[in-house]
Length: 208
Ligand code: TMP
Image (cartoon, rainbow, N blue to C red):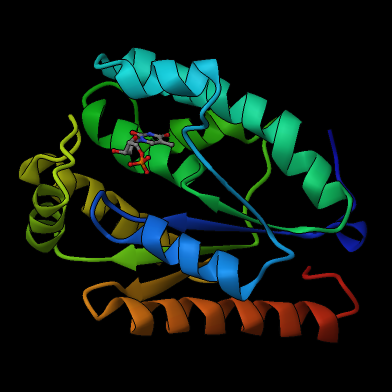
């Protein structure tokens, strides 16, 4: 499905390793921008739940991707087509960073993007919440959350993948220092969103 950019809303994604604080920031942005559609991947749908439970990386890749196809069709595309601003807590880049790390011997990161490209939609802006993996892990342990992904060596590799992706696409990625206090991080994120909205408005609704 193709969407004319001039008629559409915006897609903003929040990315980062576990413990970077994205979800807390998403909650704060929701209060600041009540008209936006806030959503997340993996979704709470059946495939999203299955993806979250699966431990085999290749199966994870395809389950997270199937969840993404459903998310795109049922939420993201209809919202964007009706001119809404959509903020997704995780998106394609999470697959590239996490499954890219877990499947590094088998599947290059570029292939993960290539698998999405023909049918998915790239974000207008990606806020990358950057934090040292040891600080992130400390946060995860404090909140009692542990998952397969919360191992320092893996998180370091995932973090490195995010950094590589951000350096390859500096126009899309905005790197946010997530080691600061939550209010400061939220303020930085909000100011980047406002900048994007102003840029869209000054270009007559078209970011191209
Ligand atoms: P969450 O903690 O943001 O809810 O995400 C759940 C976990 O799933 C998190 O450790 C990152 C991982 N994940 C992937 O490995 N690949 C993906 O495509 C997505 C969306 C999440």
